[in-house]
Image 1: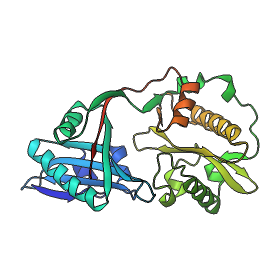
Image 2: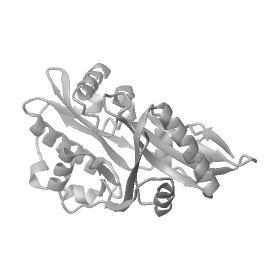
Image 3: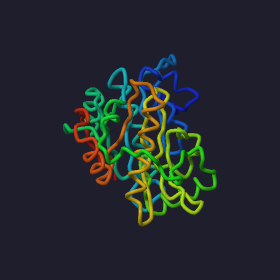
Image 4: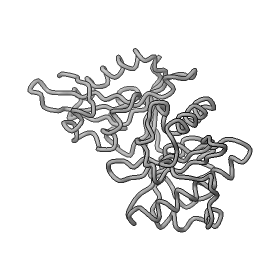
Length: 281
């Protein structure tokens, strides 16, 4: 059994285990992929994970996104390599959330806890966006709410630094490394005050066509109103420009986001999943 690194260059070889959205993320700085090959070079399994907090003062964690193999030997070889690799990154804890029963059972075999839960992710349709309450029905947006495409690289970098300083990373731990082109610049919105970006709702359009809300943050005394306006602006853009069957994903990764989704999308629930973790020290 040979263990190899999976990158964007060879990810297609592992398409039986890795979806196209995850494969694209392998170009990102904190994402890692490892694959298992048989002696004849045939693919036997894959594991993809993301390092969290690796450049902060908090303990580094690893979120396992993909884990699967043709048999127990392939899975064991992958976990063995994974455990060695994360030790080099001083990972304190590994965790996962998945609707894949086989993946959850395999991780449980290798020392992970497992319990049933509701996914942190909620999927919204165009119809659900159209049905949002009057608070987000804005007919005349102020001039300081603009597309990300109207923001210069320097302004964007200033906003990214502000987010990192205040530890607002959303789902992009690698915010400092991502160019504006990684996001959908027409659907993403920003608040520009005195020539500085002090708010942003950044949307990623994945290869599958799914829209992911990656970062939603604003600063200053009017930050709550900025959040409301940017949410209304991006919602309107999605409704106007995206196909009727598009899906928008919001991950309720912290309490403020959860309160926001409970407020505006109370009827939307995450799918049943298994979740668990394993201490690595």
